[in-house]
Image 1 (cartoon, rainbow, N blue to C red):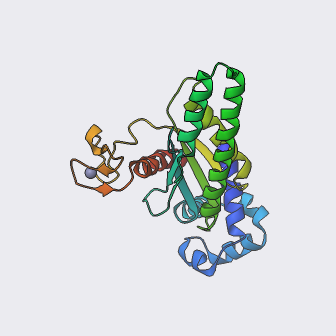
Image 2 (spheres, protein in one colour):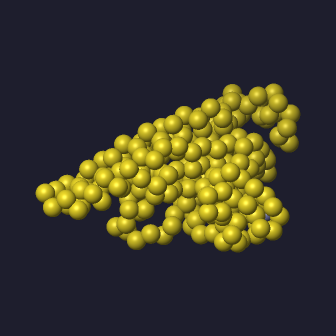
Image 3 (cartoon, rainbow, N blue to C red):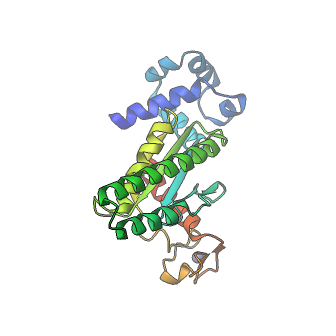
Length: 240
Ligand SMILES: [Zn+2]
């Protein structure tokens, strides 16, 4: 029920913005498409087989799926399904924040709770800044909808990865466009699976954080980006 509602609302948004090129490609009588373009609210009365055609067209041409891989030292890497859109946090901010936190803990003068709240503020500021940049770049791709897919490591509730995950989730939730969605997938094996031949091997990930498939030879300069595109693929299985 909920899923159908999302479908209709995205298709409604889309039909009101139909181009001539779109109309040629969707196998629905053009007089109907023109009608729905003027009256998107009437789409709810459209035949199911036509709604499905419109919906499939939107999914394969207008929906951008962006996988997000989170790390402890380099905060974030993102990629779409085929690695044609990629984004990386280039700064070592997380590394410095955690190092500062550890040295505050060693300092007997500093209260542990205070050290933790300083760390949390630092993480939050950096996360918000990076997510702003990511969403700005995603918006430039002119999709009708972006599905953000977050890889979850299944970390225990009070751990740092789970804090970073939660702060990221809320940063995206606050900034995304109305049509956009956030999905969570299990990120197991995403950093060692080849995006071309799907072979999983520990040695696909090199010690310099590059990717080199031991089976088919596919290479990429950044393993986190490859992991992010694998996360996007796991998200796609949930959407389509
Ligand atoms: Zn391969």
